[in-house]
Image (cartoon, rainbow over all chains, first blue to last red; front, side, top):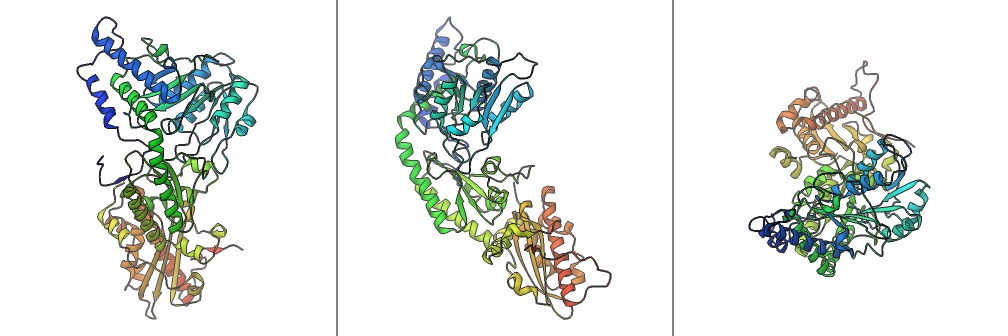
Length: 412
Length: 149
């Protein structure tokens, strides 16, 4: 697949649509344009059939029953519905009162989890944000220590979007089932890359998205367990009662068809994809850490997804690093280009200093990333870091053996 | 963010990168003034070294910069502008001239301020070391960061 001249290494942000996905979607824009809610004619039946096929495909990739899959607009909506919907349903006190229940989540979750939890805190719920360890991996012990007698919901992502680190979600699931606490997991980066079995892994609610797995944007899924226990949610969008009443609104048939197809392909090609991705990631990390001094791969060395690499380069400034590697489309831990000067809160939560958080790159690989792309990226990054270090007064001080943390800087 | 062509040019081919020696070596040289401004946690550190002759002319200038593309370009441009100037002329350079020359957007004005500060700081350091500092300059800011032991 021919992309632009820039090398695309930002597949954790989004992926191109698989052409097979696009092909499956096309008829549903034109000749099969029906509303799945129209029960009286062929157009409606065709749309409904297509949605139910997609539901089967989506359920299979996570090891669920089709009836347990709700289609949404993507992971952000799935996370909102899961967290707010479960909190309201399992609240220990009515609206307007305090002491409605306790929620456990993690400081390095995606904003689409943290912000719904923060909103619930303003609405009478309490929450604990687990501080991750230096390797980023949340274990069952972290969660156990955070639980309280009034904990109603735990939300722990399966794999972190900036680091690729994998949390002990199945173990956390077993703990939560023992304590009869609902477990939600944001599995946006995980599903499609790694085998998933919600039934045996004791997951109650799981969010995932189409556009991270070579499907279209604007469509995703929420798994809602139906037995042992039967999980119920308060809906956020009310209306026609679509999606078991949990998400009203005419279904996005084309998007759902594409999402289903993307899930089907992801399941069928998972082993092949991983066998392609991990050597690319390993090659990039091996080459950069051997060619460049003082650079570190962030997050646990092995408990990581095969397609995400997060590397910090000491003594270079983040924005100039991005400028130096502008022929690579990737993400940065630096927020310098936005209004805020705060670097990545994910990296900071691991205890990584502002300087190394600013000068980090997240490089993520996809189905169409080639070894040639990766070799070119290695060369570009090496050149940029060396160029910037040749200009960096901090690198000189480091070379002279000066401990930068002991310097009193002249403010301006 | 879109950088101007001039910023990109200075970033790719910075002028006068380097130093006249390590911080220890230049500390004792009376013909050299060093200005280091900024702080790593702010994302910018500029180091400007100037070599000044007996007639007070800046014969050579070298910079090092830890900072964004605009900060690198501002310090690179500053070295070009001060070379060959008398110190008093160099002190007349204003950050707004750097902003105009490099077409810096408002969020990058601080880079030009830092460049102006580094010129002042280097010249003050040279004046102090070479005994040119006026009696009025009692509260001289330390030109170089000091290691707190």
